[in-house]
Each structure stands twice: as C-alpha cells, then as structure tokens.
Length: 133
Length: 257
Ligand SMILES: [Zn+2]
Image (cartoon, rainbow over all chains, first blue to last red; front, side):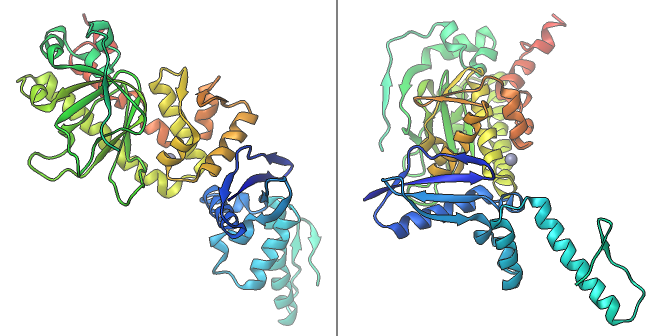
C-alpha cells in the first residue's frame, strides 16, 4: 500500500491535500482521483473545466495531472474534435469567458463562410472586429 | 456495531433536560410526567440506535450530539436523509405501528441523549405529546425531501457549506465536533473531496479546523456559499420552535402573556 496525495489547482490557487489516501496500485489512485474530480465538478462543469487534480506519491513526486474537462460528462456526447478543442482551451488555463468567446467566434466564422458561399453581403463581426478565415 | 449506551450518573434536573429544545418547550406539567421515564445516556459516534434488523421501541431526545436518519441501501452506505439534534427527537414513533421498520438511526455526532420508551411517551394522553411527535416527523420528512432535491442539483461545495451551517446552528453556532470522514459519509462523497473543499474554506477564512473541531467565525460567509436549501431548513421549521409556539411558550406568545 502506498500513500497518494490529491492536490487541486484552480487557476492560480493550489489547494493542498495534506492527508492523502493509501492505495494498492497507481491505477486505484488514478480511479480515486477521477471520482474526486467528478464529485467536485458535478453541477459546475462549465466553471471547473480548467481545474486540475495533481496526484503525487509519498515522495511528493507528481504522478499525473488530470484536467477536469477530460472528465466532464457533459462533453461526452460532443463530437471528439470539439471535445478536444474544449480540452485544449481549458488546458491553456483560458478563463471561462475566453472559452465561450472562442466557441462563439468559431460559430460566427461558420456563419461568415456560409454567407460568403451564398454571395450574401454579410459581414460577421465579433466585438467590433471583422471575422475572417 | 451493537448498541452501546453508557448510562451517565448525572440526574434529570429540569435545566439538564431543557438542553433539548423539545423537552424545553413542554409545559412543566407534561415534563414532570415524562421525567421519571427519561434516561440520560452518553452515546458514542457510530452507535446504531435502530435499524430494520434491530428495531428500537425508544425515542431519543439529544441534549448534545446529532442522530443521522437514513434508509440502509447496501452494506456500509450511510448517506443521511435527515438529521436530528437538540432541536428535535427521533426514534420509534417514526415508523408505522406493527410495520417492518425501514429506517436506520445512527449517532452521527456523539453527545448525551435522553431516552424514553415510546410506550411511556404515547401513554400520556396529552395534546402536547401528539404535537411533539407530529412536528418531529414533519421535520424529518421536510429534510428528506429537501435532501433528495439538494443531492440532485447542488454542488459538493454548496452541500458541504449547508451541512456545516445546519450543524453549527444546532450546536448554538459555536463549535462542531466532526471529522472529515464523518462529513464525507453524511454527504455521500469521498473524504478527499471533503478535505479539498474544507481546505479551500479554511484558506479563505470561512471555517477553522482544529483536531476534528470546526468553527465558523462568521456563519454569514458560509451561508453565501451554501445552496438555498439551508434557508428552507431554517429554525422556524425546528420541532422545538413549533412546539414552543404551540404550547404558548415561544417568543411569539410571550408578548401576549
Ligand atoms: Zn441544496
């Protein structure tokens, strides 16, 4: 049995798990970490996507960092490339508004492309900027 | 675990009895009637007071400490549906007569309780006793309904804040003896999850955690973090408060007197 610690990283803030839990294998510790992520993010999926859980061993060596967005059940039904985008955006520790803005912008880009394809005099803008491919 | 009730030698003075809000709300005559049958006992955390396999014929009035009430689903699972502290009473009157008991009552926070047999309690043909039992049942039902909704829509952080507030209020807002394992068990979440949330509350100064004792310097700050379920379980719903109004011993009635 080995002791593992589960530290939570929320943006600039790090919350230390001073006690840890013992597990027979690294896989068990990982499974516990995923369950903790699911409990912490339940009903606040959007706000916690960029959080990370860091699993450390007894020597305080980081075993893995789990990104909350990777375990968001709300993203399970989303196409893999969109899901990956959310993960990447969350991973770069973009704020929630950045994530939403990025998604809005890509929607506008699609609209602009469609408008151009239809030969419509359509100018898609986002926050005053012209949206271009 | 078997029932462990350790009799204490302290007597049943009215002052000691009145630490339980329901006993305090009874008229002196009714309390005097019950007094010979009320047994004071120290109860340890984790003691099972009753469950479907070990039904009890007693009713418990916590003077300090808390009883968690739930329906046992599987071995070791003990998520609370409701809890009762010095603001109420729980026990044999919860289940329908001559029916198989369904609930389990476990001591969640150890303390001293007054125990009386349900037969002695209901044997007294008294409208105050009837009201007491009704208000205590209402309280448990209200909490169970709210708990079900809370578990379905509120975050672990909100629920932990709600649990802390409710139990601090019971303990008169001062200190609460509760380990993180106990809270994790009550909320049905992992101990690590409770630790991380409690660490964050502590870092922000919302709570202080020392050797299993929790205090909140400003409960209003916890209230902001809690879900609205806490407001729905306010003191006005406590059996002790309702009974005090009913018996004309509450603050609302003192004005008329
Ligand atoms: Zn709630």
